[in-house]
Structures are given as C-alpha cells and as structure tokens.
Image (cartoon, rainbow, N blue to C red; front, side):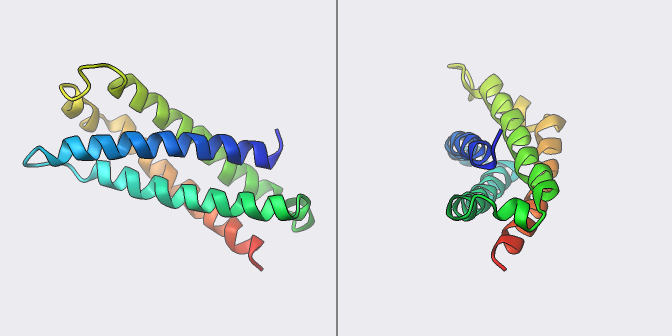
Length: 138
C-alpha cells in the first residue's frame, strides 16, 4: 500500500475517533468525577491527525521524498503503526458506543485497561510520526 493511501485511511479513522471522543467527552462532562482519559484521547488523536496530514501534504508534493531521504522504515513504524492503533481504538469505540445504551456502558469502557494501553501506544507512534514530520520539513 502506498504512503498516501495509508495516510488517507489513518486520517479517516482519526476523524471518526475525534467525533466519538468529542461525544464521549460531552457525556463524561455531565458526570461529577469525569476521567481525563476522554480528553487525552481527543488531544492525542488531534495531534496525530495533524501530523498525518502534514506527512500527506509532503508526500503529495513529492511522492519520492520518503525513499530519497531513506525514511521508509520511519514511515512504516509511524504511519502504519498509527493506522493500526487508530483502527484498534476505532473498534473499541465502536464496540462500546455504537449501541443505543452507550452512555450506560461509559464507566465500563473508561475503566478498561485496553483503551489506556492503546492510548499509551499511540503516544509512542505519535513521537515517531513527529520525527518523520521533522525530517520531511528539512
């Protein structure tokens, strides 16, 4: 799969997650002791989405830039890793919030260690993605 296709898929997932995270955040804000993880997810995803878009713009302008600067391994780790994690987070959100009773299941989801693990992994991928963005801006 070419980098632009992967970026497009990942940006699509991130848009879905941002919408879901915003809805969850709104619902969480109604609870007195709302956990910060909903806000963390939204913030992390927005940062990843912006970085993915920057990589997309750079590769759209110059399709050979990744290989010319020998960044294919960084691309694989960051962009493909982000796409995989975003897909997993999207699946978690879908499993918990695509049902009509998602508000009732809110506490179960946010107590789940899986979503927290995915968020930590996304932070690692975000760091490698930022490295890629910096390299492409040189």
